Image 1 (tube, rainbow, N blue to C red):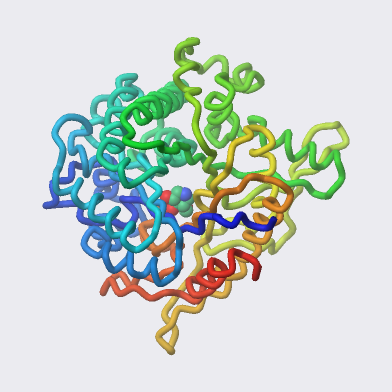
Image 2: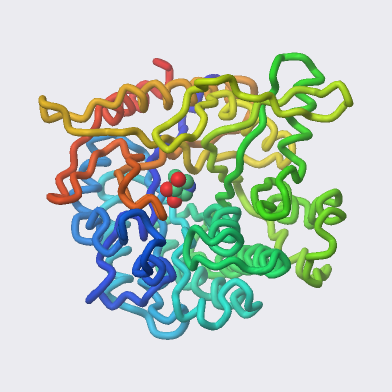
Length: 453
Ligand code: IFM
């Protein structure tokens, strides 16, 4: 089998990155609204105030998705748009926006996949301590329950948190993302623990609230590891490398097992617990039971990986990339093998169906003289990566779907609008959308269920 017959071909976005509609819509402030207004935090002072104006143009965007032939759309709900204060009163206009979007998608035959948290922490929750305050477990799970009560008659697939590695690491450890602060390491471990408990409590309440069977996952990220050769020892080296804590303390969040072992095994990885023991909060048996609520699938955002071989000392060794190694416009390495070995190792360890919840690249896209947007690099990149994913599927990894990042060019966080990840070009001054060559190429891939890769 190459790709499953019901393989889910999708596109992904997130709320703050595309919606705009930040003011006069009843939405409460989130930490990105506040962060972007501070001088020097985001490239050229860009903000998400308007972004792709998807808030007002979602119908046009769904029509474009239909034209691309995508089967599913993964988007996030901005917590502060629905609950301006994070808890309590609901912003009916914001809620209606998401209902209208979901209805539009369903009418177009596109399955909505909802992500509950893609980094838009309501500012009012932040002021109460945000992820540092254990009460967030209730605040977040009540929000999650509410969304499921509202949408589960129409939407059956949900992700709780997107890339906790990023929102804790970039937001609170090195401070390049909102809210832009550098906390003591100890606090970030507490946040991570609270985030995992919020996930677990959300899963519990969502299942209780669902109007029909729903499926829930989480969407972590991480740099994958792939073997230098087919030799058994290199494969083992890559496996060990992926599942260990390799980063220095100030980058500790970039780690697979710290986030995923608790969910699937009900415990933090022993080796890492030993490594981080001086920084850990009190962790109880009850906490771990909560975190390890059964979930239905594993979402993984994958962009690149390290090439790893077994060193002479019997320990994994990262192979240095050669000079001039291929890279994307953002400078990220192009390593298609990670879309074979990443899912392979994750499936082997966690034994859950996998969705690739994000994958893609930024390119220096422009409108050519012929009025079109030619992006051969994106076609080449996605083609190479998808071929590896197909091989993984052929080798028995249970891969259910692929969500390309991203549908539209959008607000790339602290890089503002400087980086373009979309299969649809957005001309920000006019908000005109142009399907790039890669979009038409992806349409064919979808039509042929990847047989043409
Ligand atoms: O744009 C981001 C997204 O919000 C989270 N994952 C990585 C993407 C590209 O940087």
